[in-house]
Amino acid sequence: MNLDEELMLDAQQDAAAVAYIKQHLPQELKDVFTEELLYYFIDVIVEYYTESGILDATPDKEGYIEIDEEAIAAHLAKKAKKEGMGNFSVEDLLFVVQAHMDFEEEQN
Image (cartoon, rainbow, N blue to C red; front, side, top):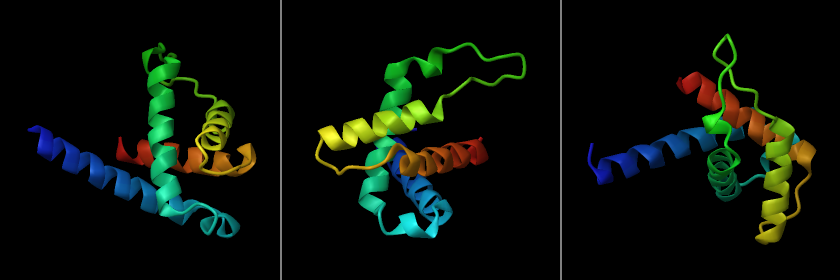
């Protein structure tokens, strides 16, 4: 697969993830988290996975890796505030993190 094809596939997967997350958010959060924000949060989640070492963790006997969803949501809240994207509660961002994880699980 060449670079253009890989970039196109990544864009399609991100669009599908945004649609999935939007669909699975509670009604009161659907207007809060715009598509632009969801794309931003997906990028920050992927960045967090890469920088935190989660991807290098050893799976347990069942093949699972322990992921602290609340820590990810707290990271999203802190980074969004720092980068001027807005002030979001960890509780609200947990819905985004959980929906993104559910989407990724369904893709695998």
